[in-house]
Amino acid sequence: LDQEGVWRCHLVQRASDGTQQPEGRAYSSSRRREAPLQSSQQDHNAIFDRMVLAAREAGAFVSQKLERGTAPPLNAMGMIAKMPISEGEELLRIPAALHLSVDTCKVHMPKLCDAVLGLAEQLKGR
Image (cartoon, rainbow, N blue to C red):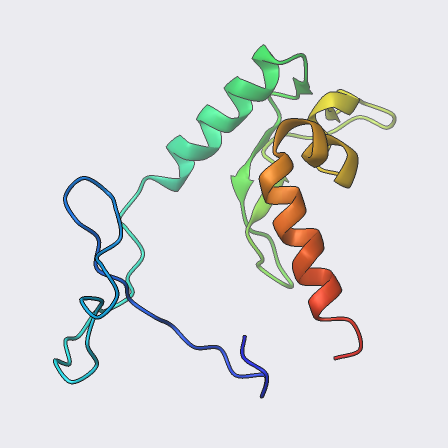
């Protein structure tokens, strides 16, 4: 996000060893190339199943009655019930260590947390 509030994308060519090319050898806009942004063809249900398995292995409880899906009226992707649910039935329990919060981000992903907090500081007042 630049000073005018416009998102800009810069492509930087990297050497085969992962290092950035020396100044002046970066991607040149005079040699325009198309770089289409596409989502990869992945099995999102399999990804959801792996996420549920990882959560359970880390101590979470995820009811067998839940699955990935959509429901009217919004049809937004999320978790839906695939079987009837009894009143008071537990569907999901996530241990505090797995909660997505600033505190857990600071502990488990400090670089990411610093970057996000720094961005938030830069965007204040916009």
